[in-house]
Each structure stands twice: as structure tokens, then as C-alpha cells.
Image 1 (cartoon, rainbow, N blue to C red):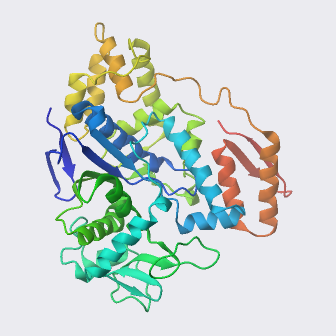
Image 2: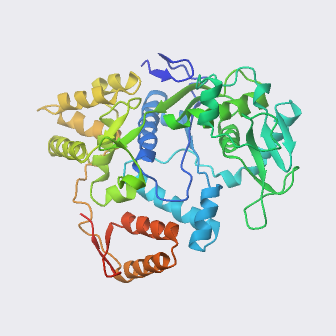
Length: 443
């Protein structure tokens, strides 16, 4: 079986040749656990779950290692903990549980390893020390920064001009920086901010160093595949490459870089201000997880996807037909049927794979259809979502009252946060002219 993958680094589609067929290694950037994951976050989770399943069929379950991290140290997390008046660990644990529950409903396999950033501080410090020793980083005012001009081929992944990189990186102007493109590896923490002891004082890591450390710890200095959303190409993945290559002296960090395209909702960019910001949790209140998964896979992973109610309704109808005719969709997964497999081997061509599923939806092939659907992560369950949903009225009322109090105090950020929490619970609220707020379950 010849798997061909599009490599963002080379801009070509090539045969995938693992460094060691008995130890195929893949890293995918996971969530920052400060709030419910939105549907755009679900796209790489689903896409690389399909690739994980495909690699396991080709090389064997025991020979594929998939690492997807949890970022549990971030200024957004700190801000959420302060707003909620709870410990940071409580925020990260709660949000991680929400994330796991949501993506499990999407039929996603657990990764082989799911490292947490806070459990890899020593590895981050070790890489930073290597970079300083090699002349690729410098300490200043309690910070440590990567010296971008020290890397002659910086920018090879994104292939942007200097002006484009400066705009994309949202560069901070700071007196301790030698160059405007230099980025933070380590930064100081005050008494109220999480921090760890380091050679540069008490502080916390920059975002980019976290993935370099976790991939190194669990996959090595160089590995096979690194994946994520296209929004991560620059600056995150570009900076990961810079850190890892300059610390360990290799030509590449990962052999193949894969990126899924953007997601928009009903033809518009997803935004809270537009009222079209959709979390996985919200969508699961109205749609079966199988439908969300199938709808995501109807578009090739590298193409933009327009997430619409119409497409979700079409996906539900198609799956309903498949499940009514499939012979073994509730059985244990076996192997993906040859015709579907051939489509997936061509850079995860899921639209072609779905066309092949339609071809299997005929007398005499239903068993193959069922086993393949199961092997691709579909449960066969299209029960009406929310049919057994119970709402804790007292809890909802308490949240509504807390939101009213925040509005009276003109704390709009807290008011918006509570509104979003209620929306994630499937609750629609209405602010009335008399100053009261009413609520109802959304359908």
C-alpha cells in the first residue's frame, strides 16, 4: 500500500516513507484548555484521527505512535481562572474533561500519548539552554528570546516575506529584544502568575517551546509527521522548527508537515460578534456526533470548509441511509474496504472515499460498508440528540442571576463568559426591556 501525503514544507505530494516502519511517529497540536473547543478545533482532531487509523491499518496498531498535546499553561487560562475566582488547575482539569467528552462523541480514538505542557518544564528549560549555548537564544530582563537572524533559513515552512512575517507574528516591541522578529522562549512570572524556577529566574514558557519539548520527549529529535490547522503554520510551527532544529542540529524537525484548511460558518468567518461561534459541545446538543464527523470529512482536509445547517442535514440523511443498509456497523472495526482505502491513500481524499462508500451501499456489499464505517470511527448511532437531556434549573437560574449581577456591575467580559457557558449547556437567554432575563432550551 502506497500512501501519498501533501507536505506543506515542500509544497509537493509525495510517497510517505517512515523513518522506521516499526515505529511510525506523528505529533499534532492539541487544545489550549481554557474554554470549550469550537468546531474549527474539531477539524484537525477528526482529520488526524482518520490518518491515525489509516497508519495503524498500514503498519499495525503496535507500530504507530500518535502524540497530541494539552496546553495547560497560557495567559488565557490565567485570565479565566481570575474571572471565575477558581484555581488554574481547576480550569484546566474541567476544560480537559469537557474536551475529552466532546471529541469522544465525534468517534475520535485517544492518542497514544497525551502530554501536558506543565509536566514538561524541565525539557523546555533543557532546550532553551541548548539554544543559548549554540548562540541561537539570549537572556534579557528575565526573558529568554530566540534570535531569529541566527537561523539563516528561518521561514522555510511559511515562505513569507519579512513584512508578512512581522504582521503575522503580531510582534511586540520591547526594549530587551535585539531584533523585532525575535520571539519569547521564557518569560518572568509575578507572584500571582504560575511560574517555575529556572536559570533565568521564576517564570513560565512561551507557547512555541512547549511543543518542541513535548515532541522531543515522546517522539525524538526528528519524527515522521507533524500536523495541525493551517492557522498554525506561522508563527507557531515556523518557530517550533526553528527551536528544534537549532537545538539539535538536524535538517528537519518532522519529515512531513500537514495542515488542514480553515472553517467558516454559513459563509462567514466564525466570530462571537457575528453570533456564529459554535462549540463542539453546543453542536452535540442538536446533532449526533457521527453527523458532525461525516460532515467534516465530506470536504478534503486541505480545502476550506463552509459549515452550514444545510450540509449537516444532508450528512444526516446520507448516514441514515448507510446505517439502515450496513450489515456490521455495530460490530467491532475490522479493515477499511480496498476501494475506500485506495481513496484515503491519496492524501486522505475523503470525498472520494465517501463516493466509494456510496458504491458499497448495495445488495451484497452491506457487510463491507458496515465494517468500513466502523473502522472509520462511526458508531452507527443517530439517536435524537438531547432526547434524554435533563437541565438543572437551579444551576441555570444561578448562572442567569450571576450574569445579571455582572451586567449591573458593567463587567461585560464576565457577562459574556456566563452567556457562552449557558449557550454551551444548550440554554438560550433573552434580555427583556424591564431588566429581567428569561431562558429556554435551544433546539
